[in-house]
Length: 104
Ligand SMILES: [Zn+2]
Image 1 (spheres, rainbow, N blue to C red):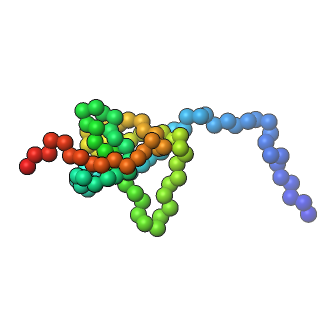
Image 2: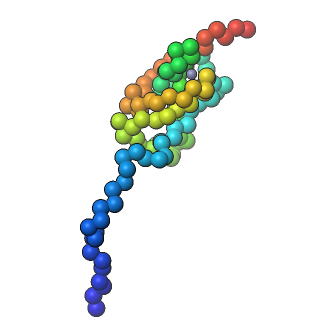
Image 3: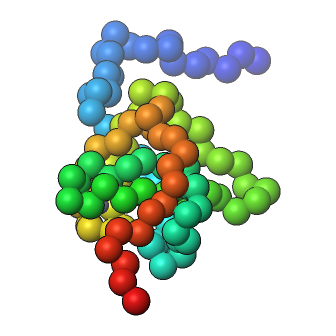
C-alpha cells in the first residue's frame, strides 16, 4: 500500500519574520562571584559610568555550551549597574575585572 503524503508546500510560503521574539539569553556572573584581578570572558559594560566587565557564566562542565552565531546580538543586563545593552557575541573577549572605587 502507498501512503499518500501531502505535497511539500501548497504554495503558501510561510515566512517567519526576521525579528525573533525571543532574544538569546546569556547568564552572567554576579559581581559578588567575581574577583578583582581575575580575567573573565565577556564584555565591558557599555555604560560609560560603569565600564565593568560583564562575565559570561559558563555552563557547568559536561553540558554542551550553546553555540551562537558570530553575528548574534544579545541583550545583556549588566550585573553591576543594571543597564541593558546589546552586545555582539563575536565581540566578547577576555577582560580583567577591576573593582573601581572599592574602599575598605
Ligand atoms: Zn554596567
